[in-house]
Structure formats: structure tokens, C-alpha cells
Length: 189
Image 1 (cartoon, one colour):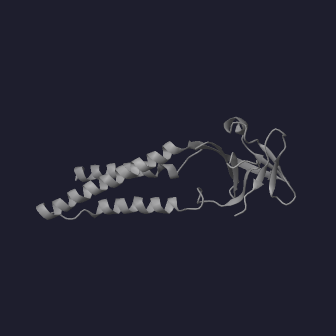
Image 2 (cartoon, helix red, strand yellow):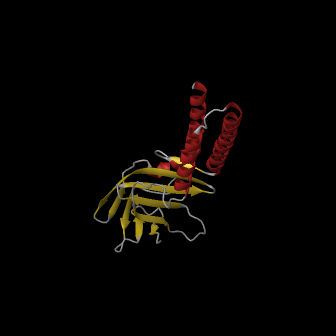
Image 3 (cartoon, rainbow, N blue to C red):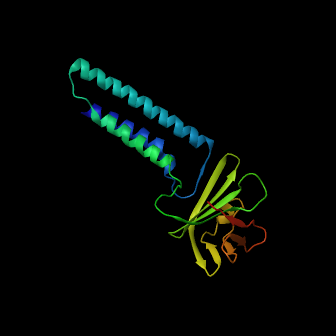
């Protein structure tokens, strides 16, 4: 029984490492290395399952043991969860985006993106090449002014975002109150 528990534990831990990228907590950065780590742990998880599955088949045929369905259930659970998470349209599936805007620059790539969520939280996403960093926090609206309730937002985002913006009349643009910051244009889906 101890041997079975150990293989279930190892398979589950590798499965959790495989899915870790889908559950960022707080501020985080991700890039190519995170994608490669997801592929690496996904491959290890699948390879380990295949090895344990065929060892299980061998024991069923040669030693008349019962088939171990727990291995298959663990594999199906993590695989199903992976495919659900990879096909979601947004990262935070537990809340809804109420406003999203991109940096208004005349370039072919994004510098930054701001998402405001229904639960009064925000994500300020800024990109550098193949690497993106996300700063999260709370916001409040007072009339047409948006306040990002983080004092260190300018430092955390390498001066891409500021903590105060003003909405235009039809709420399609966020204009920085400080002139040195780029305004944001609403993303239309």
C-alpha cells in the first residue's frame, strides 16, 4: 500500500507542477521559460503515467492483481483540467472583465494592457520582447477618474503605468493625468 501511495503522490506532484502556470498569485512574470517548463512537466507527467500504466498491465497479466484505476483517474483529472484551462478565453475565470485597454502607440507590438475586473481588481500587463510581467491590485472609480490603488505601480511596471487616469466622455480611452504616461485605448472584441 505504501508503494502505491508514493506513486500516486509523485504523479500528483508532477501534475501540480505541470498546471502551476495557470494559477499565478500576486505579481508575476512569465515568458518562454515558463512555457518550456510547462512542456517539460507535461512530458514527465505523461511519460510517468505511461510507465506506471504498463507496469500495472504487466502486474494484472502476470501476477493476477487488480487493475489500478486510480492512476488512470489521476491522469484523466489533470489532463482534463489542463485542456479546460488552456482553452479559456481569459485568465481569471472567477470574475469578469468590465474594461480592457491597450497602450495607444503606433507600433506593431503591445507595450502594455490594463484590465479592470468586476470585483474591483486590475491587472497591469507590460511586455518586453517575449516576456510579460503582471502587476495586480485594487482600483476605485470616482466620477470619471480611475485610481489604481498601488503606490508602487510606476516602479513595478517600469514607468509604463501610472496610478491615476481619466476616462474620456464615451469611456473608450483612459487618459493619463500625468503627461509623461501613454494613454490607453479600449479593446473592442
